Image (cartoon, rainbow, N blue to C red; front, side, top):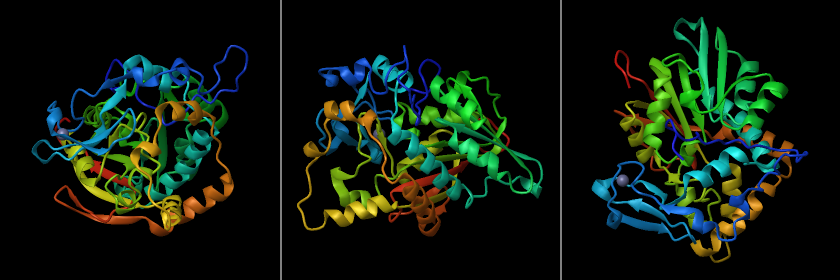
Length: 370
Ligand SMILES: [Zn+2]
């Protein structure tokens, strides 16, 4: 998918259905039922960061079945990405029509609390002088948990208004009716948002899903006032913890996560979108630490054992999440204890040791357009 005019923005969120009469059951689309889902894939035409179509410069990082992850070697680009992606129709079915499970919903609820804890460390929720209303845009808001939590928290010294954008009508309905938050249904570009009207434009675990991340970031920046902030949260696939796990790192789901950033490539993406990178925070979550500990004493698995497209599609929307309340409490405490700020020197992050989850903060320059 792209996040331009013609295709849906990705969603972290799902269409968590109840399976009532006439409703689809989560994970029950032609994509999930396809006998040969690999036939729905198309080759990626160009590097999502530098735009090069020089496939000879792409080196395989992990040879996952059906979807090898490659690194672009063109002029030191270094971007890692899935070399095959679903075609537009399959993406629409996957994300818009029916994406979700208890796992997704509970995971989003936990992530919203973690993200709020991280946001509180950044200089984004206060206005100059401490008064007024901070206007936040959350693209790919899913069930709307982050706007809901932000609304309860309020701004620093003033008010806070958070607007979510989401393509899934069922999620939008949940956010509005159950949480009472303001969510626009549709794409960022067609949701009736006024350009330049937000102080903060944020996207949490979204940019790894989009076909064209530079264009996505530029579009998001366009809804932020000059001098305002853009915050991008995504996995750091260059983190020591991720390298240690190799292809076993669980966020390698190359049919869904199609861009695999590290601090350098994410900063370059935001620079190409016309933004100035000003801050980087990261941490490695406790589940990853635990998984690494559990790998000790056995031989590591190869890429071909770690991902199977057909099997993943058949089970991913039927997963639950055990020990939800314990996970929520532990995750929030953990990020509070382990989140670190890294140095950024003239827009360049200096963070070879950054954790597996990163938050990059950039600013829209004053006085001229993006
Ligand atoms: Zn490239």
